[in-house]
Length: 562
Ligand SMILES: O=P(O)(O)OC[C@H]1O[C@H](OP(=O)(O)OP(=O)(O)O)[C@H](O)[C@@H]1O
Ligand SMILES: NC(=O)CC[C@H](N)C(=O)O
Ligand code: SF4
Ligand SMILES: [Mg+2]
Image 1 (cartoon, rainbow, N blue to C red):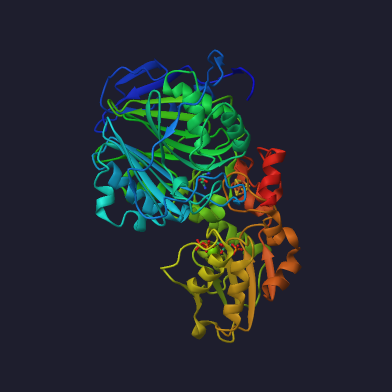
Image 2 (image 1 turned 90 degrees about the vertical axis):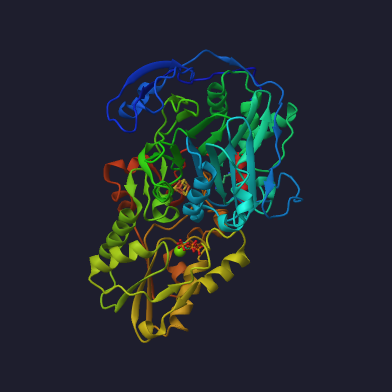
């Protein structure tokens, strides 16, 4: 972005209506500009959720380019665990990894505590680090650490200083920047010339290297090696006012996947990229009326928040802590919706409703379709690969009429293996995690259903376990998604294409490699069929190679080189 002008396409106006949680009538409908809201009630409901999305969009005049950076990342007030001395190098050698979970709460005296609970519910989205930033209206405080939420916040003294009515939180699984660096654990808290700002990000920016290069050549000093920090610098160097405009302007420069929550002293922002790759939902706590944003509805459920709606792709929502008014703006002209289908295949928890569809139901229908496409006549049992293969196996069993049996037991003390950052960790985790039930499997022909094969680590170990330790006669693997043939550039750990087993070999080659008696994957048509006439609104690039936002040549090379 060397040019001196940026075209900012933010909405100039938003619609807000207000109501008390105790009433159902809309009390007020006011029209505001850039979040200059008049207080009409303590509780507001956004009218825009009833409007067709494009009606929110508008345009505002050109703005001048970013000035010199004045951003200062503030070290965590509390660093719970980890090694703070890990350097801040831009680790080009890092490979992209997986998902993250974000949460934001405003209007509740227990905001930080609720955030930590919500992060527990989102733990499956990232196991490398966790953190919370909260605000008491004047001061932002932060606690971050490496490891699981239960490890980072095991000591009540870590949460105790996090007082205030608003907070954001993050569980990390790195896509850009070292997995082991405490500095990369979010939320990031920064000081800039208009105050303090914290951010938590789920997704991956495909153009962050170029943006970082541009910012650094204008004097920005980066404190982390994460793509997310670029967003803070873009906001800090924007010449737009107020913060909503700066956020919008920053988002116009970034490309790729981003579901974001920002916290200032008195406002909470939620932003979703125009394609809507990653999920982000909004809810409201019944007891206090607090507004909650979270990656998945399972986090809302845990803290008794009622789901209200998704944050729309391309939407910026701002909740003002002073009057709980909500402002909605549109980032830029509409782009085709491309929700990540892999959230339904693997990432999200089955009790979540993601992109408007219950995850357990999608998985069940993938499994049932698989049974119709690739039956295994004469098999004795259908066995799920815990955890995420469970509902697909149930669908397979019911559609095929073959009895369902829990032939593999999962240890509750080992997390997700696919999201382990290194190969040794993944190998060990599969071994420790799954154990065969010999008295079920011995001498039997079994259909083993898993949600996906990525590198093949899990499947080959499972086939071996079931045959040797379990004593099964035949193992027929059925995979409830198509072969993964392409890397993901939008926040998921499908790293180098050479590491993807289905990219290296055909189905028969994969079968021989993992050692099962037969192998079949779900067809692309059946995957898409589960979403019927909405299927065009899903990204399935890792199965098809049709990338909605082409990675720049440089990004693609970097991602495949490391
Ligand atoms: O081919 P691979 O590289 O081994 O990756 C695929 C496996 O990883 C995932 O499980 P994971 O253990 O991460 O999570 P889960 O417990 O939710 O199934 C997925 O469900 C497959 O089982
Ligand atoms: N998986 C994610 O969404 C991670 C967010 C961010 N890109 C990071 O690497 O920390
Ligand atoms: S490429 Fe695959 S994992 Fe990545 S966003 Fe698209 S569907 Fe999801
Ligand atoms: Mg699994």
